Amino acid sequence: MRYHSRVRDVAGEPLVKAVDLVREYQMGDQLVRALDGLNLTLDGGQFASVVGPSGAGKSTLLHVLGALDTPTAGTISVDGVDLGSLDDEQASAFRRHRVGFVFQFFNLVPTMSAWENVALPRLLDSQSLRKAKPRAIELLERVGLGARVDHRPSELSGGQMQRVAIARSLIMDPTILLADEPTGNLDSKTGDSVLELLSEVAHDTPNRLVVMVTHDPNAASVADTTITVRDGKIA
Image (tube, rainbow, N blue to C red; front, side, top):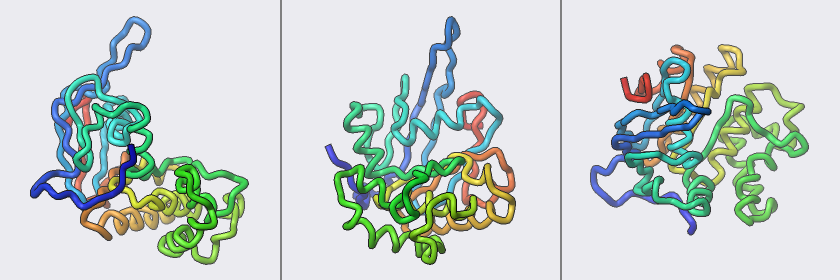
């Protein structure tokens, strides 16, 4: 099954809707409830930050939103898709076509140029690098790296590598972009520029949502909406 970004055709339907969402893990003899009946709705066209103490369930929520993890109970839908109903193949297709990921440690392939790293998701989706190159270069220009398209990660600064990662996250035109501590390895000035870029990405189309997990209150303050998670629930 293939998923593509689309304009939702249900009036008033939120882009993200979680109802009584539960995620439990078995750790030895202990049952850990990372998400405990969480309820959440989010619309497209906005930048949302998720904050809370360590162990509150922030990363678990991000993983469930990205179909990297499945709920134990309750429901969660993204762009009209019930994530709990997807099998492994469908979840993989959903991640490729509907979700963009930005990580703290960039996760770039060191032997690939900037444009090749950006084009990589299309290569993994059985498209050729040659056909993906024009769009990859366009996205690098979009994030201010038009002069760095042939540079490898070792030739880029931390902020530039994160911009490559953001460009890569957009190559499949995702509905939702999930950023996990995207400024965690950057100095404050560089981090501010990355946050500004994420905000622009969230607002350049009414159908895209950017959700960022962060421990940095200054980073969270840049977002349109701040979601505080505590003990697996929205505080």
